[in-house]
Amino acid sequence: MTTRMLSPSPPRDLHPFMDSGSRPQRYTLCLTLRCNLACSYCYVTKSPITMSLSTARRALDFIYSHAPPNGSIEIGFFGGEPLLEFPLLADVTDLIENHPSYDPTRVSLTLTTNGTIFSDASRIS
Ligand code: SF4
Image (cartoon, rainbow, N blue to C red; front, side):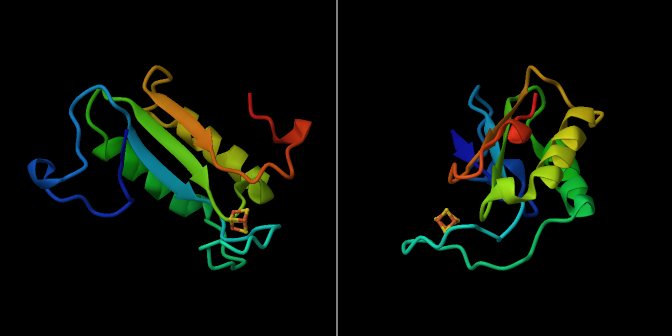
Protein backbone atom coordinates (compact mmCIF):
# COMPACT_ATOMS: atom_id res chain seq x y z
CA MET A 1 0.00 0.00 0.00
CA THR A 2 1.08 3.57 -0.59
CA THR A 3 0.35 6.61 1.54
CA ARG A 4 -0.12 10.17 0.38
CA MET A 5 -0.25 13.23 2.54
CA LEU A 6 -2.90 15.88 1.91
CA SER A 7 -0.73 18.44 0.23
CA PRO A 8 -0.47 19.83 -3.27
CA SER A 9 0.71 17.09 -5.59
CA PRO A 10 3.76 17.28 -7.80
CA PRO A 11 3.25 16.09 -11.36
CA ARG A 12 2.25 12.46 -11.34
CA ASP A 13 5.38 11.28 -13.12
CA LEU A 14 7.46 12.84 -10.35
CA HIS A 15 5.43 11.69 -7.39
CA PRO A 16 7.31 8.93 -5.56
CA PHE A 17 4.18 7.44 -4.03
CA MET A 18 2.01 7.33 -7.09
CA ASP A 19 1.11 3.85 -8.13
CA SER A 20 -0.95 3.12 -11.15
CA GLY A 21 -1.33 -0.52 -10.11
CA SER A 22 -4.09 -2.09 -8.08
CA ARG A 23 -2.91 -0.99 -4.65
CA PRO A 24 -5.14 1.61 -2.98
CA GLN A 25 -4.11 5.19 -2.56
CA ARG A 26 -4.22 5.87 1.16
CA TYR A 27 -5.24 9.19 2.70
CA THR A 28 -5.38 10.09 6.36
CA LEU A 29 -7.83 12.54 7.92
CA CYS A 30 -6.70 13.68 11.35
CA LEU A 31 -10.09 14.51 12.85
CA THR A 32 -8.78 15.79 16.17
CA LEU A 33 -5.66 16.22 18.27
CA ARG A 34 -7.68 15.43 21.39
CA CYS A 35 -7.18 12.11 23.17
CA ASN A 36 -8.49 10.53 26.35
CA LEU A 37 -5.15 8.80 27.06
CA ALA A 38 -1.63 10.03 27.72
CA CYS A 39 0.65 7.26 26.45
CA SER A 40 4.30 7.87 27.27
CA TYR A 41 5.38 7.07 23.72
CA CYS A 42 2.81 9.28 22.04
CA TYR A 43 4.08 11.67 19.37
CA VAL A 44 0.82 13.60 19.04
CA THR A 45 0.89 17.11 20.46
CA LYS A 46 -2.46 17.12 22.24
CA SER A 47 -4.66 20.07 21.53
CA PRO A 48 -8.40 20.80 21.46
CA ILE A 49 -8.07 21.33 17.71
CA THR A 50 -10.69 19.48 15.68
CA MET A 51 -11.15 19.39 11.94
CA SER A 52 -14.01 21.49 10.67
CA LEU A 53 -16.57 20.03 8.31
CA SER A 54 -15.58 22.57 5.66
CA THR A 55 -11.95 21.43 5.89
CA ALA A 56 -13.08 17.82 5.62
CA ARG A 57 -15.13 18.73 2.56
CA ARG A 58 -12.11 20.37 0.91
CA ALA A 59 -9.91 17.40 1.81
CA LEU A 60 -12.39 15.00 0.23
CA ASP A 61 -12.58 17.12 -2.92
CA PHE A 62 -8.77 16.94 -3.01
CA ILE A 63 -8.79 13.18 -2.54
CA TYR A 64 -11.40 12.48 -5.17
CA SER A 65 -9.78 14.83 -7.69
CA HIS A 66 -6.23 13.51 -7.17
CA ALA A 67 -6.78 9.79 -6.79
CA PRO A 68 -5.95 7.78 -9.90
CA PRO A 69 -9.03 7.23 -12.06
CA ASN A 70 -10.68 3.90 -11.27
CA GLY A 71 -8.08 3.15 -8.60
CA SER A 72 -8.91 2.10 -5.07
CA ILE A 73 -8.95 4.75 -2.35
CA GLU A 74 -8.48 4.10 1.34
CA ILE A 75 -9.43 6.92 3.70
CA GLY A 76 -8.28 6.54 7.28
CA PHE A 77 -9.65 8.41 10.29
CA PHE A 78 -6.87 9.28 12.70
CA GLY A 79 -6.11 11.48 15.69
CA GLY A 80 -5.65 11.87 18.62
CA GLU A 81 -8.58 9.66 19.31
CA PRO A 82 -11.04 10.09 16.43
CA LEU A 83 -13.95 8.50 18.31
CA LEU A 84 -13.94 11.49 20.67
CA GLU A 85 -15.38 13.32 17.69
CA PHE A 86 -17.91 10.68 16.73
CA PRO A 87 -20.57 13.10 15.37
CA LEU A 88 -17.89 14.66 13.13
CA LEU A 89 -16.71 11.21 12.07
CA ALA A 90 -20.28 10.31 11.13
CA ASP A 91 -20.71 13.58 9.23
CA VAL A 92 -17.45 13.12 7.31
CA THR A 93 -18.46 9.56 6.48
CA ASP A 94 -21.70 10.96 5.07
CA LEU A 95 -19.68 13.46 3.02
CA ILE A 96 -17.51 10.66 1.67
CA GLU A 97 -20.46 8.46 0.75
CA ASN A 98 -22.54 11.28 -0.71
CA HIS A 99 -19.74 12.85 -2.76
CA PRO A 100 -20.51 12.87 -6.50
CA SER A 101 -17.33 10.85 -7.13
CA TYR A 102 -18.05 8.21 -4.47
CA ASP A 103 -17.91 4.65 -5.70
CA PRO A 104 -18.37 1.97 -3.01
CA THR A 105 -16.36 -0.49 -5.07
CA ARG A 106 -13.34 1.86 -4.95
CA VAL A 107 -13.51 3.49 -1.53
CA SER A 108 -12.77 1.86 1.81
CA LEU A 109 -12.61 3.47 5.23
CA THR A 110 -10.37 2.66 8.18
CA LEU A 111 -10.22 3.92 11.75
CA THR A 112 -7.20 4.12 14.04
CA THR A 113 -8.45 4.14 17.63
CA ASN A 114 -7.18 3.31 21.09
CA GLY A 115 -10.32 1.20 21.49
CA THR A 116 -11.33 2.60 24.86
CA ILE A 117 -14.61 4.22 23.91
CA PHE A 118 -16.22 1.81 21.50
CA SER A 119 -19.95 1.55 21.97
CA ASP A 120 -23.00 0.65 19.95
CA ALA A 121 -23.31 4.37 19.22
CA SER A 122 -19.91 4.39 17.57
CA ARG A 123 -20.88 1.88 14.92
CA ILE A 124 -21.37 3.32 11.46
CA SER A 125 -23.36 1.08 9.19
S1 SF4 B 1 -3.99 6.60 22.41
FE1 SF4 B 1 -2.73 7.25 20.66
S2 SF4 B 1 -3.08 9.46 20.46
FE2 SF4 B 1 -3.81 8.86 22.50
S3 SF4 B 1 -2.06 9.23 23.88
FE3 SF4 B 1 -1.95 7.07 23.23
S4 SF4 B 1 -0.63 7.06 21.41
FE4 SF4 B 1 -1.28 9.20 21.77
